[in-house]
Picture 1 (cartoon, rainbow, N blue to C red):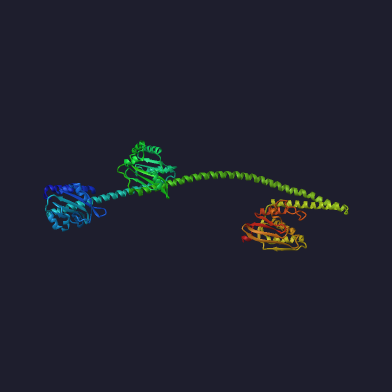
Picture 2 (picture 1 turned 30 degrees about the vertical axis):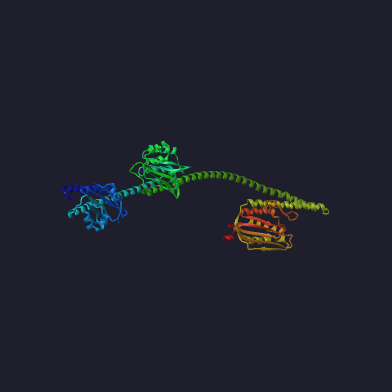
Amino acid sequence: MPLSTESKLLDWFRFVDLLGRTDQPQAVIQAVIDEGIKAIGADGGFVSLRSETAQELIFIGSYAYREDAVTFLKSVPLNAQLPFVMAYNRREALFLESLQQARTAYPEVAPHIQNFHGSVVDLPLLAGDDALGVLVLSFREERTFSPYERTFLRVLAAQCAQALHRSRALHEERRARQQAEALQERLEYLSEAGQALNTSLELQDTLETLTGLAVPRLADWCSVSLPEGERLIPVAVAHEDPSKIVLVRRMTEHHPVLINSSGAGQVFRTGEPRLIPIITEEMILAASDDEAYLEAVRGLELHSMVQLPLTVHGRTVGVMALASSHVGHVYQEQDLPFLLEVAHRAALAVENAGLYAQLQQELEQRTRAQDAVSMLNNQLEERVQQRTQALEIANANLEAFTYSASHDLRAPVRHIHSFAELLQRRLSTEDERTRMLLTQIQNAAHRMDELTMGLLDLARVSSQALEFGPVSLDHLVQQIMTDLAPDVGERRIVWEIGDLPVVCGDQRLLRQVFLNLLDNAIKYTRTRAQASIAVRAHTVPEGLSIEITDNGAGFDPQMSSRLFGLFQRLHHQDEFEGIGVGLATVWRIMNRHGGQIRAEGHPGQGATFTLIFPERMDFTLDN
């Protein structure tokens, strides 16, 4: 039957109209197979399209062919020496009208058509210069295709190719638009999620916000589980159906998720996501032997699921699970980058909330500690004030007593001394014992007078206000040496006075310090044929050091702690006179100046007294 009969033309027009109304690639191909081949009047045929790799032709479908007859057509490489492959590669139709004609017109095809009978037309599907595939038409009877019929079939193939190309373009456009919309929606979701997660630092609020945003935009239900001991506890759950939230919580209570188990536990341990595109009945049955639990799982109507690690700084802090109950919503591999980004932001929010909670706890502890310290400080300050007041009263009483006692003691001591002198004049001087006793009385009175004077000096040193000013130690020492010259008499003393600085202090009290120390040096060196006394200045970490060294009697270093005590003496009165007040006075003066005094010595090897003036008192160092 000619291809241009009226009935065939009507079938053809209907087919062309169908192609014009079809905008899905698969629907176009199916229309060509189901309607196009029949409309042309062919007894059979098939369609093969170029693969995505452009290395082979993939069989799409056939009309009136047995299934076993098209097995070898499933995937045919483009270098195969088959007529329809040659038509595709050449971009031109092959008309095999008979075996003899085919051998003559296409000798290169001859070896591949030994069992050929009837007629075959191989039509490349061309959209411009692009070959999309090939349409093969077969006829049981041999026939000759007129130039008109050949043109008709070429036009048919071109229209099929154009329809396929157009539908593919529309499909790609729709897919691109859907992807853009999906991307925009995801970006909007990330923006909303970021804003929502930043609104609160409370962990529970953060997680409930997160799961609430995920449903229904990303999933039909969403949960976030955090570790607690050996389990993963769902701390936030959201579902389209609120009643199923209770079901999920009951399930996890009766069947807790262990960290060392598979599923969510494995995701938590490894930090790797778990994707289940389709949840099968076999998977549900493998989850548990508890029929009640299995029924509860089925009640959730889970179709697809993904479990995501909440990872931050390489550490997994929880697991986020998303699930779909709709057949049309399937999680796929390409969804993972976006979902992992969501999980990462959630992990940051969880970490921030945890840090905030930790900070709040630390602040509370610090506040409690500060309150406790403040209370203790107040108590301590109150006790210090009380003790300071008591000490001030005691010192005032002591100083008053010392001053009064010294004054009250001096009068009778002077009387004793005067009366002893009168008695010594009136009594016979021939009575040696009487004269000796009177001398002892006078000496005792003299020592008592010195002692009271020492106590008066100590009281004044402790109570009188300091008058700070520059004090030239060099001038001070020279002046004291002049004052002590009468006590030296004919003794041979070698003085070594170094360069002494100017310090800040009370001139009167510092004079008393150096007078006491130099007087002691003269006193304790009187047993030496040639005494040696040195005064030197040094810079030390604490400030300024003044050393007064002599080659006198020295002292036992084990007894040095007693040197600066009141009424403490390391030598017998018969050896070296003294009352034990001078060094105590020196210590008190240096202490009031913020300085120190130290002593070193050995019996018979002399002694060194070191005065330490703080740096702020040294004018020389400041300059």
